[in-house]
Structure formats: structure tokens, C-alpha cells
Image (cartoon, rainbow, N blue to C red; front, side):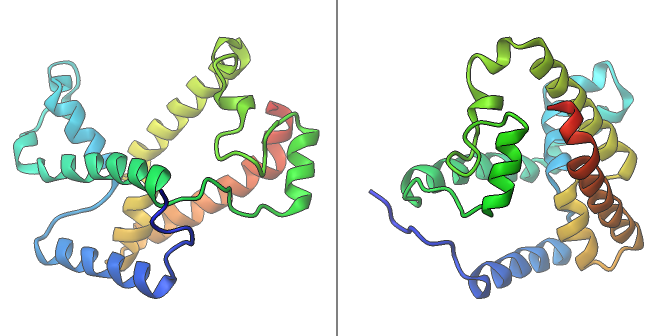
Length: 185
């Protein structure tokens, strides 16, 4: 049973995000998924091995609610608020991805090329996932936050470092998509 088959309009989603950010600013809290994951790692005891995780995670417990909410919300949206169709992808993009060997583009949110059980037994796929995970983790730490933290929270606070980080993220994404991805696939 699908409750909603269309995306929520911008005039509902935008003000909802703005309201949450206002509440976070009012309570002097920061938002970003990397903060939530840092809290989770600290809670699990990573502070015994790395100073970065050695802090009083209890004062950031609310971050865990955001991480849990993202997982639960994703489950609810995928299973009860979607008709199972994938958003429209331009035909030229589907053709380009097919030419690169990505099967299922435009048909699945998680193409089998990357997410089938066979993909995880492929050494090249595992190496790309490990390298990508390292680069995302390093970049998040080096930039002082993740995409959601900089783009949503940092820009709404008019932080110059967030603007620089977002510009860098877009440049890096365009470079990866247009120049590196064809060689990696």
C-alpha cells in the first residue's frame, strides 16, 4: 500500500527544512550526518583508539535520533510512500551509463552493477568501494563536515567555509563524473 506516489512539493519540504534548521540554530546545535556518525563511533568506544572520537558523546545523543530517523524514514518512504518507480533519468544519461557497463540505470535506484551480491565478490568493485569510502571519510574530516552539514546548516548560517566546501564538492563531483568515472568503470 502506497500512501504517496508523488514527491512532496518544494513548498512543503523547503519550509520543513527551514523550521528544523531554525530550531537547531535556536538550540545552538549543528546538523550534519558526519556529526551523527562521529557520535555513534564515540559511543562505540572509538575514543580509546583515536583522540578525534574522545569526547562526551552523551551531550550529542540527539545526533543519534537523526541517524536513526534517516534510516527509519528511508525504510518508510521506500516501502509505504513509493510506488516503486524510479525517477526519470534523461535518456542520454541512461545510454552513457549502459555504454560504461552500468546495468539497470533508469530502472533501479541501486543498479545491479554495483549492488548485486556478485558485485561484492568482484575485487575491482570492492577496491572502488574502499577507495570511495576512504576519500569520503577523509574529505569529510578535512572539510570540517559533510555535504548535508555544509550545504544545509553551514550555508544557512552564512559560513564562508561552507560555501567554499560546497563549491569544492560540486567541482569535484563534476570532475569525477566527466573525467574519472569513465576510466574507473
